[in-house]
Length: 150
Image (tube, rainbow, N blue to C red; front, side, top):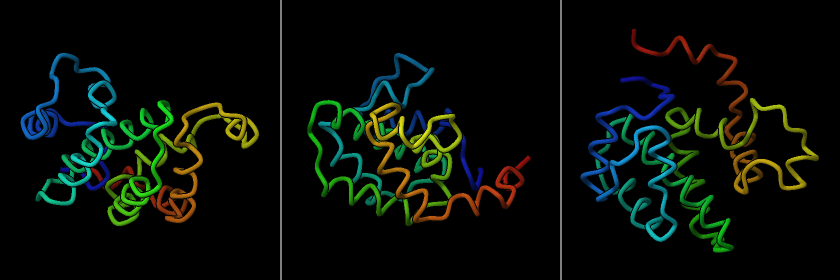
């Protein structure tokens, strides 16, 4: 088990499929494909209520973030839900480093102006705030790749 997961493991995928009755039809980008804004509360409640492994927490958070992105696309933004997601990201920051980096576009070549103009993800501005709040840059600079089991 990795301290800083960077992808959905087969075991985590299988467990989440069983727990949330998710599709297992696609393997590539599965966590994005099964995103469902109508299940956001169920996903968040499940995250907080179960004793998940680190890999399962990582996979479930990617589904939660992708589901929130889909909600934003459908103009169903809800601050209460975002505050719950933000709280989990901050509390379990080390598990979700890659998710925060990916959705904040911090390793991409977007300028702040492009992000402000709506390039990237709709959730990007929120994730940048989490990235900055958690000082992810300092964590990234501490050789996060060396924390993996080999």
